[in-house]
Length: 136
Image 1 (cartoon, one colour):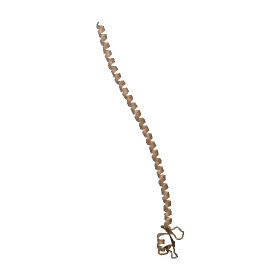
Image 2: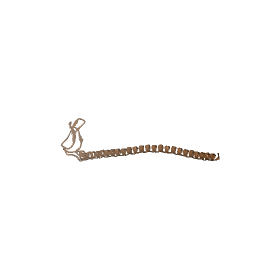
Image 3: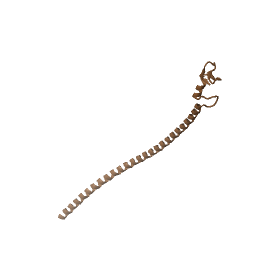
Image 4: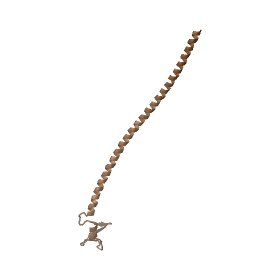
């Protein structure tokens, strides 16, 4: 075991101590309580850590999958919005064309009404002319 560049070893009584052998770093009972490994085997703490790392990897994959799905759904929605926008633009163009046609129809109607008035005036004038001719 190494800490900050110094080497540590487990003594015969199960305590970790520095190379100088002065003072044990962790008594054996503390090492056991903390779940530290004994002679190369994985401690419960290390096993749990490995399990958590695996779960973290799986969660990360799930998150990435959800992100991809969200992007795909977002792209689908954008395509639908673009289609709706095109449809709206086409509707606006058609609406403008309809308004133009309505304006032309209104003009034609007004011209037709004017022609009707002129025809009535001509008919009256013609009737008056016939009466005047009859009187001459």
